Length: 269
Ligand code: HEC
Ligand code: HEC
Ligand code: HEC
Ligand code: HEC
Ligand code: HEC
Ligand code: HEC
Ligand code: HEC
Image 1 (cartoon, rainbow, N blue to C red):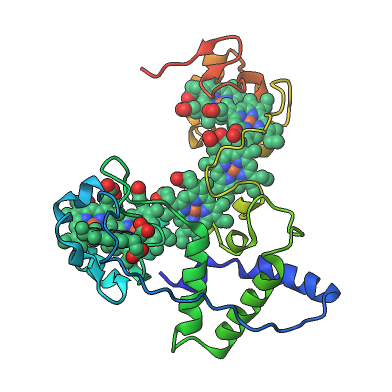
Image 2 (image 1 turned 30 degrees about the vertical axis):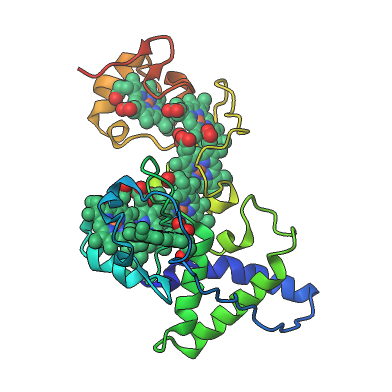
């Protein structure tokens, strides 16, 4: 997977154009994170390893080296061929990654799995990789510089009117979550306009009333509704022989799609 694909160029550059109109560009110096060297050896009790790595409890150097701390190469040595990770859309970025500890935390005890997805870390990894890539074009590198500049201006401000921090906002959610789009594309590609990266549910959301007649503006009927099945089964079950497919509200309720109006739960045989 190419890392450039995880970024939302169009969207962010649209915004940059807007921001540039109002803000005089002052190219600040890049902030670089100070590199602390971990003195992991001298720390007595880092905490127990996860269940999956329990057999490495006495083999610290399976993951650590004296100077560099946790080294991705050591993880990769054991995990390079994990096909299920590489082939699953959201995690296929693993094919292209040289750092692990941002999302794979350890020493939290046996009961905790060693994974916490971190979208901000993901964005940082992507930006760094693109800036470092020797074969990336000047144009691509210029984009990265602009993105970083935009971030340095926006990170600390609250001008961005979304629920997610700017560093997540630059991600192109579709690259990894297209398969999760319950909205059949009706709500666009900017999942981050409405969702956060913690959970897809939005507790404050109130569904339109069951008396709404706009169901088909937000919902796609299943393929069977466009086949003979609709006449033979759906219309009969619902007792609405004249209802057209787009008139979901004549047959459906908002509780569940198999909760048919005036008929009750439909059970497959
Ligand atoms: C399965 C791989 C693995 C093994 C084996 C392992 N560690 Fe770690 N360790 C990690 C990871 C990953 C981190 C950093 C991420 C985090 O903060 O959880 C870490 C962090 C640490 C830290 C905190 C400082 C730092 O480098 O971030 C110490 C101290 C540490 N380990 C000591 C040990 C000791 C001592 C052993 C052997 C008893 C050991 N580790 C075995 C994976 C491992
Ligand atoms: C000596 C080989 C070895 C090393 C080194 C190693 N692992 Fe593992 N890891 C395993 C084994 C074995 C399992 C359990 C079976 C499996 O899931 O493949 C495992 C499981 C995992 C899991 C799944 C855990 C779960 O409960 O879902 C993750 C994630 C993982 N390792 C990441 C890492 C990372 C990150 C590092 C480096 C910090 C690392 N591993 C170092 C052998 C290793
Ligand atoms: C940006 C965050 C991120 C980074 C960086 C990352 N991973 Fe992962 N990784 C994940 C997530 C999220 C999953 C999915 C875990 C799940 O399904 O519970 C995963 C899954 C895995 C699994 C499969 C776990 C299982 O349950 O079978 C392994 C092995 C793994 N990663 C190893 C690595 C190694 C090795 C590196 C470094 C080369 C790495 N990861 C870097 C987020 C990350
Ligand atoms: C490069 C891939 C990638 C990108 C880009 C990405 N994510 Fe994720 N996201 C993941 C992975 C991996 C997980 C962990 C769960 C899993 O393995 O399916 C995850 C988890 C989530 C979750 C937690 C619920 C769940 O499915 O487990 C939400 C919500 C989410 N992402 C939203 C977003 C949004 C919104 C964006 C865009 C702003 C985004 N993600 C961008 C890879 C990505
Ligand atoms: C215009 C706003 C909007 C956009 C854009 C949007 N969604 Fe949603 N999405 C919602 C609302 C509202 C809900 C209902 C939330 C609830 O009931 O908790 C929802 C629910 C979901 C759910 C089910 C959550 C649950 O707990 O059952 C998933 C999964 C989901 N959206 C994925 C996506 C993905 C992937 C994208 C991007 C392709 C996306 N959404 C874009 C508004 C949006
Ligand atoms: C303004 C957009 C909108 C309208 C109009 C709308 N819905 Fe929804 N509906 C959603 C969203 C968002 C979700 C949550 C994501 C999903 O499941 O698709 C949802 C979920 C549902 C669910 C799934 C509940 C579940 O948990 O399985 C049903 C059933 C449903 N709607 C029926 C209807 C019916 C019937 C109508 C018309 C009376 C309707 N909706 C009108 C946006 C809408
Ligand atoms: C004539 C009545 C009727 C209309 C109009 C109708 N449906 Fe249905 N629909 C049904 C019936 C009955 C079932 C369950 C039996 C079946 O599969 O036909 C069903 C099943 C479904 C299911 C599948 C539930 C499952 O889990 O298998 C979905 C989703 C659905 N309808 C969505 C819609 C949407 C969205 C619309 C409007 C765009 C719509 N329907 C219009 C009667 C109707």
